Structure formats: structure tokens, C-alpha cells
Length: 418
Image 1 (tube, helix red, strand yellow):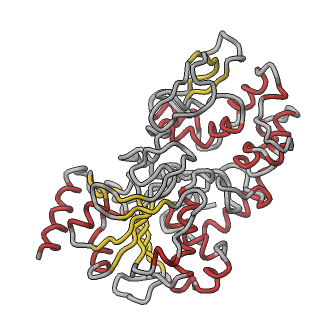
Image 2 (tube, helix red, strand yellow):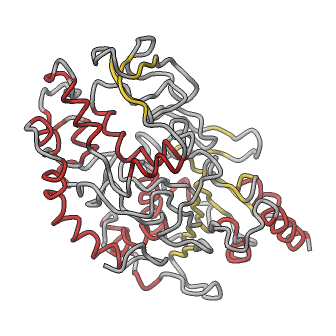
């Protein structure tokens, strides 16, 4: 009776957050689809501050519904989402829920058998932003592997992809596989995290043991089918033409939709000596360096919560401000990765040899820029003065191959029929 009341209460709360019948409803809000499967089970939950049902964290909602969450796993930035990019977050007891939190970012990237020994079902709910170098898709893959390796059913609560309306960028060369790129996908891959999970498993991109134990045909087709290994709770009223506005910022340095739309194009600056806007109120919307022409836009980055350490703090930087209304930023992006800003910054940078951050090895192929690009060609094309069209043409053969693979795993209407 209590569970039924809470379901009705949650439904009413969700309705009042948006009256339109066409409102996009993330998988987490479709509690009638998965809550019965959790009843009487011990749950391991992978979640963070984006894992919400209406205005309430999923962990809190499930606890109030009588679900027994025995462990919470947290990604980069932590369960509450306040840690810096790359910051080490240890294990602890969450004060609000009283549940143990295990960090899955850094040296430990997947649950251990000991973490899962008292778990019956694994649940995953993170808001992705649809770019290869955003680490949540890698976290999900490792979580999937742990589920299959340890014979635990996995339920993924799908969420819309805010950059899911196009596909673009160089496809990762596996020689440049890293924490910011694990699989041969382009920078913008145009899939929800649920679709991506189907691709990772269907293409056998997981660990050898997980691949051996998982069958693509064990995907749950109906909630009444209890023999599933993997269940995707789909979004409602979503397709790949949707422009979904995130209700919660996914990480400290993606504070709004403008940053999220520009991120696929401006994240390249993380591999250069330019500031990418960390330490300002417009990260990934503004970028520059002290040595660029003083006639350009100026800003001074400083330490902030979620960006305590970065480049050029306390220095006046000169560069570009791409911010504006959401529509203005979307027009600037134009449904593709923009290289013109990176190319113009290189052209104006006075000391070309120090534009890209060189690794300790002194070899550019070991650089963070190459990890972001997914190849060793992009920096060379920029230095050689190749045009944007010429660079794009070099991406196209592998992009076309990826698009064929991608279509096999789509759960929602695509933005194109090609």
C-alpha cells in the first residue's frame, strides 16, 4: 500500500514539473516499468546528482519507496557531483541516505566481486552529454562488464542525449584509447546511453569474460520477462531530433546548455596551453591565453568550486566569447563539430611550438590533445594549414562505417534516414 501511494505521489510530482503531454520523460521517471522488479531485492545503484525523479534524487525516491539500496557507486565528480574533473574521490558513507558510496573513477573503475556479493540487481542512471571524451560512457561500460562477469542483472534507466541530434568528428583510433576515449566512435556519436550500452555489448567491445557471459538476445523485451541480463528503460516522447534541456548540470564545468552544445568543439582546448574557460562562469564558452592579441575578448579565470586547478588562473587572457542564447549557440554549432575556433586560435598564437601541451615523453602521439582527438592526425593537419573541409573529408570513411553500426542499436527515431 505504501509503495502504491509513493508511486502515485511521484507521478503527481512529475506531472507538475511539466504539463505538456509531449514532455520528454526520462527512464528514471517511468517507475511503473522497473520498480516492481526491485521489490524485495538488494540493489546496487550507480548514480550522481543528475539521477533525479522530478526534483528528487533517485536514491532518495527509491529509499522512500521501500527499495533496499545496499551500495551506491559514483562516477567522476562523485555521487553529489561537486568534485573537480579528474579529482580523486574516496569511498565514504553518504550522510543523507546512510548508504556506503564506492567511487568508480581513478584506479578503481568497476565494482569488485566483493562490492557485489550482497547485491541482487544493478541499477544505472547517469546523465550523459553525448561526447566520446565525457567519461560517463566509460563508467557505464565498466559497470556493465562487472554485471555480466558477476552474473548480476543490470537495469539501465535511459536518459535523453542533449547532443543526440547529430554525429560528427574523427573516429577514435584504438592506438589512442584512454580514459577519455575507449571505443572506435566519433566525438559526437548521437546515441543515448541506453543505445550506447546495446552497441558496446552487441559489438563485443567489453572485457573478454563479459563478452563470453553476455548474449545480445538476453536483452529484456518486456517487463514481464524475468530472465533478462540487461534491461533498458526507455525515454518517452524522445527521438534524435529532440533538443532536450537538462534539468540538472551534469558536472561542475558544464553549467548550462550553452556549454553542453559547445563542449564537443571547445574541449580540444584542454589539450592546448589556452584556458578553456574553467574558473569562469562560462566554461567551454570562452577560451584564450595571455599571449593572444589584446584586441580580443578578455577574461581572468580564478579557482572556483569544481574548478580549483586549471590554466592561467589569476592571469588576464585574451580570446573568444561564444556565449549567447541557446538558439544563438545552436546556430554557431550548426549540427557539427566546429574546428574554426581551434584553427584561428592556432593561427594567432605567437609561439606555435608551445600551442599544444607536450607530454613528458616529448612525443606528440602521447599528448592529451591526441587522446581528445582520437588520432595523431588532427594536430598535424592544423599545423600544416589544412582547411576545415579537408580535415572533415579525412574523417568521412570511418564516420560512414560507424553510422552503419550505430543504426543497428537505435531505440528511437533517428534524425536522418540515410
